[in-house]
Every structure is written in structure tokens, then in C-alpha cells.
Length: 99
Length: 342
Picture 1 (cartoon, chains in turn orange, brown):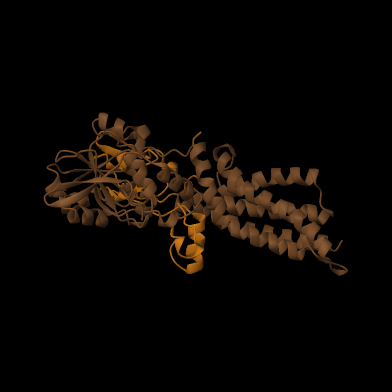
Picture 2 (cartoon, helix red, strand yellow; picture 1 turned 90 degrees about the vertical axis):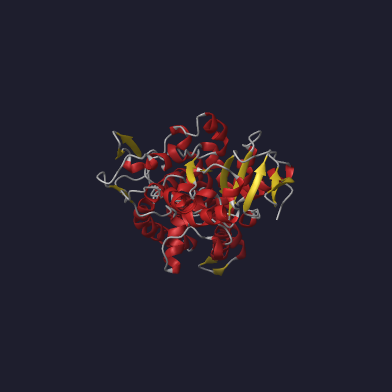
């Protein structure tokens, strides 16, 4: 059964003008958000994006922007308590680590 | 640090490269089970650097992974009869995906390892195969610019590597997709249990102490009776959030994780109260606030373990969930204490 998370929340943006159709975004995306047709990438399933940032990181044309981060409530809480950005690094004091 | 997977060494250009086994022994399997139960999980690592599997030569493929022993074991058992080089990045013992998110499985570390191991002198090609999920931390075009090595992203799962090779080094759509099936969710529950257990024990202890309070002062008998009841209810909320919600994740027809936990908790609380009612109406009602708050909070934390939640989504969910959880826990606790006096 397919998992679906909240709609219309992700920060993913694609500047089609800059795209050269290299397909890298399609290759690295773990949720098939992109397809490439006629040498241009298209965002097919925006709501499936988990903002991992792999596409933007591997876009040599810098056509993709996304605010990457971990969708981890415990990490966000830890960040709030420490006054930092959301962190996946719960290893330091709780003795357990996420992921 | 465990090194019994090293079965020999290979002399190349006057450097010695350890040859590793493609077979997981009892110790490896036991280690994996322990890591799943959070035992030694943060120190389950191997030395970074270059390894050989089988009898690789200058034309053999190079596979890259993290120095988390579980990641390493997954890779080597799937490279059975495939002569290859394995390049291990120093990810501080964290798996590929999480390390890539943190940047330790990243462009800089990959470049450093390529240079340190003098990879250009070992192979006569410029191809290096990374697990797809490493793409979160690695910028393929930057690696190419600096080292000349062309990064090829392989499948998500090491078990697809043989098919990936046969498929001319292309991962199919299926191989590129992260699924989160029932069995994989179940495997992650033990770590969730261990991670939240201390809070459960603390909460149960608090309820045992509070349960003795009544209009006549303090009663140890009442503390025991009320505490035991509280323990059962808290344990129900705990298991609901930590195990049942993850197991039934896609089948609970709401999207927010905290709501998944809350809905389950209402069903469970309803059943428990029906069969084992408390000492007063107030107490019965109080559990309909406390148990969902507990279950919702723990289920919400499973967003970090799940493979499909975005930071933006979780932030949105938490804006609603955190105040509700605090309000519910507070109302529940007040009702429960009132119930002690009636």
C-alpha cells in the first residue's frame, strides 16, 4: 500500500528554463517526483516529495531548489529545545539515535 | 572494532588492501539483531578506506558505502561472486541515507577517500558506483570536476546490485523507489520501543505516586490499585503509538502521524474502559485524554523513522499536534486527579 503525506506543503521548485534534461533528478529521487520528457524535467508528484534535497544537490544547472531537511518530529523538538535547526542528531544526550 | 570479515590481503602498487568475505557469519547476524535492539548501535562501525571482495583488478567496479557495519554487511553479502572494490566513507558509523542527510556521506568525504586511497592508480576506469540514497549528500558533478570520477547512482537496495549490473548499470524505476513495507516497519519498532521506554517508566512511576492521594490523605493500597490501572492504560497508549501505529501506518485513513496514533488510542481506550472500567466517571473520561495524547506523541515521532515525510509537512503537523497533546495531557491529568477524590 502506498504511503501519502500532507498535501501542498513542500518547498520543491523547478526552473524549467535552466533544465537541460540530464535526468539526474529523476535518477536520484526516491519517490519518483520527476519525469523527463522532451529533454525537460517535469514535477509529476509534488506531494510525494520528502525534501531530502538529492535532486537539487545533483542538478548541475541549479534548476531545482528545495529547503532540505529531515521530516523528524523528535529532531525538530530537539532543535527547538537546543535553539538550533531541526537535527537528526539525537545521539548526543538521549543515548539513542534516530534513523 | 570487529575485523573478522577480513580474510586476506591484496598487494597492489606496494600497498596492502584488505580482502573481505562475502559471507555473513553468526557474529555478523547477531550484531545486526543487537543493532536493531539499539545495543551497541551507535558504535557498530568499521574502518573507512578501500577493501577488495573476490579478486578485483584494474577493470573492476568500485562500490561505495558507509562505515556503519550493517550497511557494509548488506553490500558485501550482495556482492557474492562479483569481484569488486569497496570504498568505505567515514560516516561515523551512521547508515548511508542518514549520513548523507547530515553531510558525512558527502561530496567532501568521497573526494577525500578517492584521493587518500589513490583510486586513480588502482583502476584504469573513472566510474564509481554509489547507493542512490547517498545522492542526498553527494553532488555528482562536483566529484567529477575535482577527481575526474563519474558517479553512477546504483539502486536503493544492495540486493538489487546484481540486477543493476546486468541491466547495464541502470537502476529501474522500481530499484530507485523507496518503499516502506510492513516488514521493514516492523524491524524498526524495537529501536522505537527502547528510545521511548524511559519516558514510559517515568510516567508510570508518577502515576503510582499520585494514585495514593485521596480525600483521607495518602493510601498505599490505593496507590497500588490506581497505579496498576494507570500502568495498563499508559502501556496501552505506549504500544499503540510505538508499535501498532507504525505497523498499520498506511491503513489508518488519516495523513498526520499524530492523528494515526490518536485514532488507534481511542479505539484501544474504548475497549479497555468497556471491559475494565475505572473507579469513577472522571477517571474513565481522563483516560480518553491521556492515552490519545501519549499515543499521538509517540506516533508523531515515527515521522523521523518513516521514509516519506518532509520537514515542511512535519512542521505543519506539529503546529497543531504539540498544543493539542499538551492540552489533552493536562485535561486528562486534572480529571484523573479529581477522580481520586470522588
